[in-house]
Image (cartoon, rainbow over all chains, first blue to last red; front, side, top):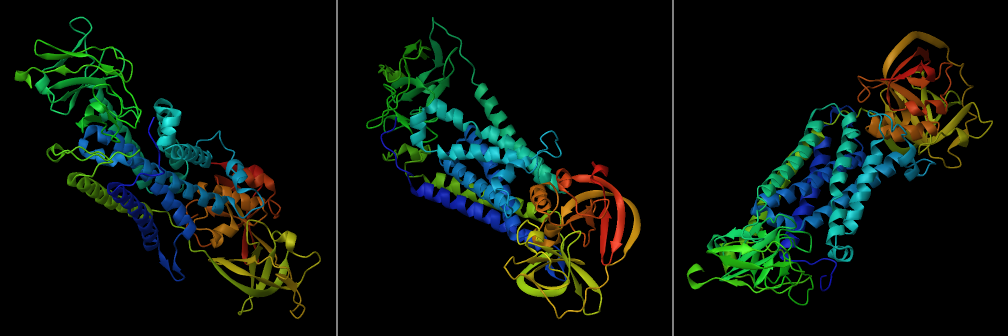
Length: 354
Length: 259
């Protein structure tokens, strides 16, 4: 578990990121409202534009869906290219912003379409359309409400406090619900707003967004699977390769016949092997590098000493370590993990092989 | 967590992003370029989505409260018959400020000429007055001439129309847009509240100027039986009837078919 928690850890980079996020959301909504008014026909009585609240309902709906698409695209993009790593770092703020936009959308819908009557707006939201047996008539509002509830749970538990409290595995499972939420939103759009419109642009854009997200995940998954699962040689040990094939401070990832992947790091003349899975959010440690003597996760910068898999004090995260050895000029790693935090002697390279 | 070690010199040669460490110029550049590209793409998509929206129609709600004097009609929905400058009688339907009928707040026994305080919702030839609901929002107007003769009914003919049952208040201009599935819940609340219903042809629900009043086969307001069909695409078979300046589409609920 981490040492302490603050509501938000700010840095100039994060401020820049959040400023760009705010500017992006505001400009999207602003352009939407302006373009809607400018595109509306002009008649004798003035422009026939939609009501301001209804414009905001549409703008926030489109912005929320677009932002969630972006959020889901960043993950696989960061796996496909290191260039995108800085975008991944602050993705949680994107998620919280997405929830707030979705909340604004849902609140405006509930107020405008379900309010001003003697029926409770929330009751109206749930009972106004009972046609669950029809695709065309399906009450799409319930799908949006379900997605909003998922986004709320994710936003509410986005802080590292909840990661540490729930444990990384459960926390990750909870946050994988973003995919069902995205599917619910797609259904919400296709069974709702798109049915009201005649332009083919809307199904093309929504379908294109879903195809983009699916395509990026598929490509990143194929890249992951391209790392072959190793076959044990020399008893149970796995051959990693010549030490000088691993750049200094970097790692090679190997996949044992069973269990989690192993990140084999070269730190100058020393070879260490640790679990490839960061305790924080499951980030790929083998894609990180050694900074200040610690393996540093590429996702959020969590650090571990390569010698024992422990985070440096005052932090308390631990990951599994592995034994390594040098055989015939090649590194080998034992596939069975040692308990998290177990110190292991590094394999020291002879002078000529450094 | 707070971790702020120095950036190692080799980071300059092999940039590696660490969120808590001072960002290398290349990472700031990545963020700015990505943000700029996303912003431009987002603005383009936003403009494209906005410009392709279906028309919302010409209606509007002038929220300024004014007075109208005319003759109160209670059926099929509360309305006011107003004498225009050219001498013609024109119907203005009466509604509440929300999604309720004004029928319950019209004093019992009130009839004949009245003055109404409210704001005007108008679309094409249609008029609706949203009463303020204040205690004196409607009052007898004894100085007005006697109530004119009730208008005679002129049957236009039988009709089969593919379209949508609308709540007239929203469609006249209280909401824009006021048709289709996204508006179904609102339309159902208005219908449930006893507001006038109308019927639009599916080809012009969005931008038509006029729509007939939607009544049952006997020319009365529909009951709650209509609620499941409100805002759904339906085929309606019934009779078109003209009463004064209003066209009515009289349809039995049993003859409605979803399409």
